[in-house]
Image 1 (cartoon, one colour):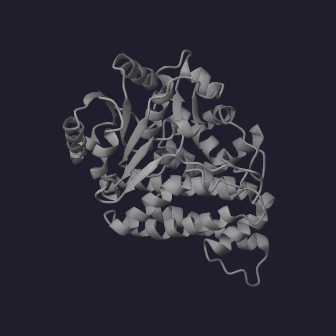
Image 2 (spheres, one colour):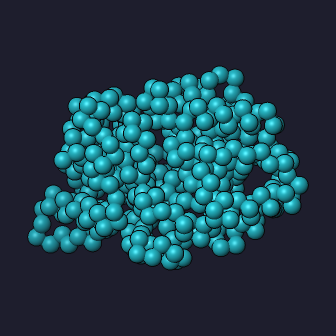
Image 3 (cartoon, one colour):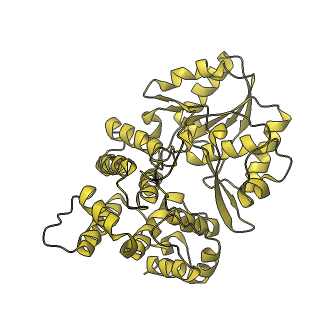
Length: 389
């Protein structure tokens, strides 16, 4: 294990089919004014909206709604949410939805009482929160981001073509999250498998860094094997509770800061993917899937030892009679075939990326230094071009 670190996670999780029953007890810890944040209205079709509002009313809460949170929440939507929260003296923001809704709720929680432009302060200058924070609770309906148990919040600014994530501290983590795997059953396949790959990408971003014998790597290999197994089942039968419950739990542990301990972490796939999303508004997980294989093939020579381990320990590649490079390449081929089996996007052209966008996407990509290779602008363009072949 490398470095010195502190691990703390203040989020309380309620997991399982009956987890919503715990909402009433949690609500007793907060004032009367609740801001109910959700997306395009799928929670109304599923009946979840009625269940949640009934609980809120029985608990004597005043409900202030903030609907229509988009898959890639915009800075304009953030300003709108801050206005609702401030005008109504909100005591708790209750996010009901997937990762974007949870991300957005956290952005509103830190921005409502910010005395500066929150986009400038939190997303451009990456400063810490020094103002009042509105607590957040989450009821999850789609898995992938891990936003239910971390401080991450991604916001898109279309005018400047930037999509930026700020990872806030423990004080911004959701106070509680309710995880019922059955609430994820109705997600369309495209969104479902996109979430599956977001989970995988989160793990790989942390796994492909450093070369020491790290306990975190062993944990991540187990999470990856479980994800691969369960996702293959879920694609065939989306209502397989065992598979979907495993995936929901993996998603949370993939990005609640635990497996990052002792790791420098990479995050370049996410940086390139977010830049693509800023230009195309494409589904987040699909921007990651489209860029991952070209990226990992490019950096593999710089982290060959770990890519060999990945092939053997995660994809069960036999090392007999093969060079390290052959083993590593076979592992990436197994990963590519698995991704195609799930129905993931493998080419950025399918996300409406055009050759004319590539230089701008590279410009909008934040360069990270924790992985096996620090990329140049030209190398990012090369990886993008490889994804268009």
